[in-house]
Image (cartoon, rainbow, N blue to C red; front, side, top):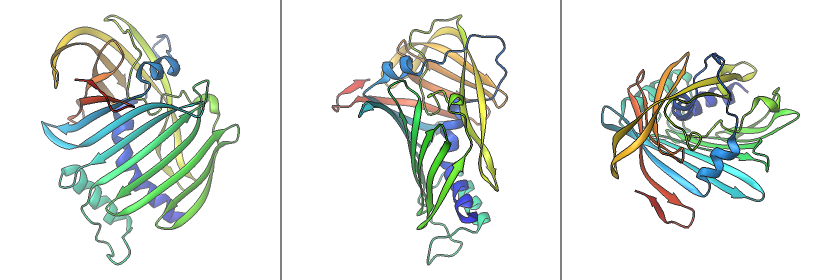
Length: 285
């Protein structure tokens, strides 16, 4: 189990990017909660959004987020890749060294091949989370998890370097919103509107496994601005999402698609590069 938990630290490096920019713990401030994953998912259904992860104009990696319907379920997929040679990768490499995890035949010498993770969240016909599949690769070290979410909590199997471990985490399904992996906001947002969203995030790890914590994000649509995108000057609504960890600023279109997202505290940004539909048609730019 100790090896599995240490492997989970690697996966955290690959997934913390998406979690950090989407969710920040904060009080509700008396605002109306918008817990409407069906509306958000429907607006993005059968589309894949491709983003460039950057800092100070320099590329750090890529992120894609797709929304599909499959076997009477909705499925969200988040794919994160961090590019070799960047400061983030070097910091992650040092963290791997500190854990003592190594690839067979190359003790304590993790290869600088980058970090990647694919996370698939399945929603039932009422947009309630019901399953999670995760596969990750960091410096040639692989991690995989297949989890079921139901009245028993979170159950399933995680694996690392050929080892497999059953897991069981107490969790009330009502604590899940269906927005845990969604990099999109509600459609039709206008300046002056404000709302909150709730979700569940992994706040850390303990000897018993992942520590799950409820997070409330407070959103304020502050203005309509013209920003520069790969499609040229584009009108967008500026939304500030605030929590204890800081503020993330998103510029969205009327569909709720995030055109750009800045996290000032980290100096990191996500910049939309293209939107492709399931049949391969480029829908944007």
